[in-house]
Amino acid sequence: MATAKEPSFRESVDLMFNRAVALMDLPPGLEEKIRVCNATYTVRFGVRLRGQIHTFTGYRSVHSEHMEPVKGGIRFAMSVNQDEVEALAALMTYKCALVEAPFGGSKGGLRIDPREWDENELERITRRFAYELIKRDLINPSQNVPAPDMGTGEREMAWIADQYKRMNTTDINSRACVTGKPVNAGGIQGRTEATGRGVQYALQEFFRHPEDIKAAGLSGTLDGKKVIIQGLGNVGYHAAKFLSEEDGCKITAIIERDGALISDTGLDVEAVRNWIAKHDGVNGYPEGKYIKEGAKALELECDILIPAAMEGVINISNAANVKAPLIIEAANGPITAGADEILREKGCVIIPDMYANAGGVTVSYFEWVKNLSHIRFGRMGRRQEESRHQLLVDELEQLSADKELGWTLTPGFKQKYLRGAGELELVRSGLDDTMRAAYQSMREVWHGREDTHDLRTAAYLVSIGKVAASYRALGL
Image (tube, rainbow, N blue to C red):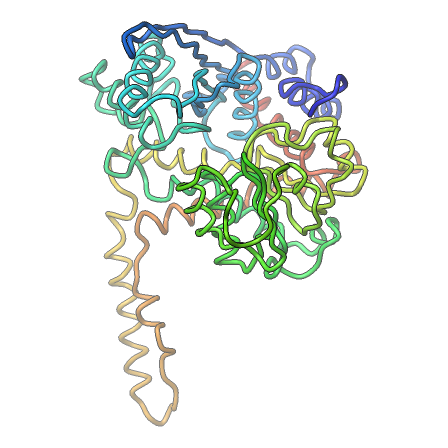
């Protein structure tokens, strides 16, 4: 897939960082302080399983502590290594700064294939990994707060939170040690789909700006746009579902591990997801055309390409063949630095990962705040909001009863208007506002500086500027 010239994921992050800081006036010492990873802890631990001791290797990397706690997911995958974890931790720093979540950047990983172990075994492995990190304050509500990532989810976060509680029995804020938990274990509504929802909000904001749509060689609205999704995991599934069901997009290809499905008339995302759950792949799905070499579908004609799985899927070996005029990076680092250059020269607009997939950390921030405040969002104000709305509706109903005026309330208006905002509505509102504000800060740089011709460089300039300002405020 890659050639000798291809930079690694970590090198790609460094190259993109260097491209941005070359346009900034930072003191060399501060530039280096922001770039380097503060610390990486490597743990090797044994767990007795299936009659013998199995040794596992895990990492927790802290990139920047300009704000604490530091924040970043834990992934379970055989590809996990120190370089990858450190690169992802750096991206988390810039991502949190860009969307103004008050965290530094961190990341964790365990080299394991979760599919090789049953639930009971996986719980024992996860708890032991968590124990090794917790006893070194690498999981702590005020210092280091993990979240789900590739190969982990609500279940694993609940195990980690419980392990922390067992080791810190008097910590009243123990639930805030990790985010992405189940709702009935201290989680927040809307967290599971948050990253995919963030991708949707990012595209909606992009399509509010005619100048930006034109830059991508597109026109009109999201309605009817042909979309290719690579990876139908949590992020890809929710992004595809919301875009097709709510924005009228047509999902013309879905790429998975075992190949790709292609359909010009559009695929039913829910049906494909259910098929994958039963058959562990897309092969045999009754609708659309199946091709075994899934990566080839990245090169098909479409309006929007959404790589939502692994890093480096678009690289110098295939970038020249990618025809999508607009790419939104739902995964971390799906486009290498070499491919990024090729695509930019072709005029492709790339909505970068540090912005596009920031929905997860944004709603994680809301969950962390909820855990620290010990109250559900909307609980105090919802009914009072409804009461105030009721006053207005009562007045309108009195006016509509006057036949001389000759007007009535629109059907359904009363029911919609009277509904006060609960936790889910407030989470979505907060996420939408965050994605809009972050995009505005990027596009101001993109269109406002003559030396910035792409959104990725603009995103790095905004985020590095905010991190630098934090360090300066600390006296560095």
